[in-house]
Image 1 (spheres, rainbow, N blue to C red):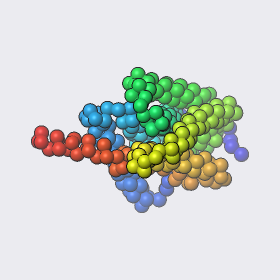
Image 2: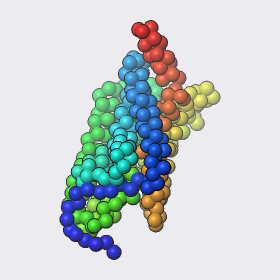
Image 3: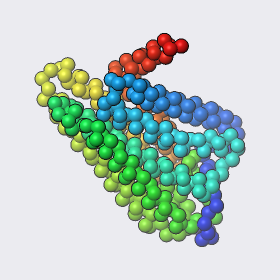
Image 4: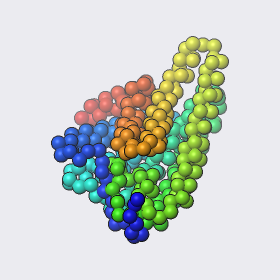
Length: 312
């Protein structure tokens, strides 16, 4: 049974992956490499899209925003872990923990919204190609991204402010490599019913709602592709969705893995491992998934590097 002190916590301990000294250098090198690869890959994608006028379309506008969010997501979770490994510390301040929770929720929900907006963009492009430029006009694209940001900010602000009312027990060790809201609630000695209610309602509305939208969009896309008479047209339509569909599957499968891990008893290690997938691996893979399978991105990258070489 937890020992109550009914006081405001001054800080927490992030237990991370391993206490073995020989593992720390390996973990530091591995996660630093993944972080640098993620940041460089996503920055290169943003630079490529912004510098090439052929890519100034709604799809690549949303993709650039997704890359920006992925950089923020991995920076929120990994940088503190790298600092702790480097300084041989597990500590994080109370304010730092709440800040990390705020931005983790913000970027996770934003990822979800942007993937939904991109699914809608593909639906319009394939099912209503003649009206695409009229429907997906710059005003609507900007509005969709703005609404995604506003809803994400309000949700993360609400849940972070609600966490301020909690008091904590003497055990302030979080079995994770970053401050995660559900893990924090498990350490609280005060009543967390309202916090859990808001957390699960937000997950249902802001997670389940967009997922239903993505499934609906792709059901319409599949229906449109099946009605196409040309095999070449079918292949071209499917290829424009393949990258996005791959990212969607990775994102939701890993989130489902985290949910199932958290439901299992004594699952702190499995939760941390599953969390690596959606906080580190997916942001790292996104620019490669979109660039390696996209001829427009490949051409733009070639033009960018050729221009840089000529300027030198």
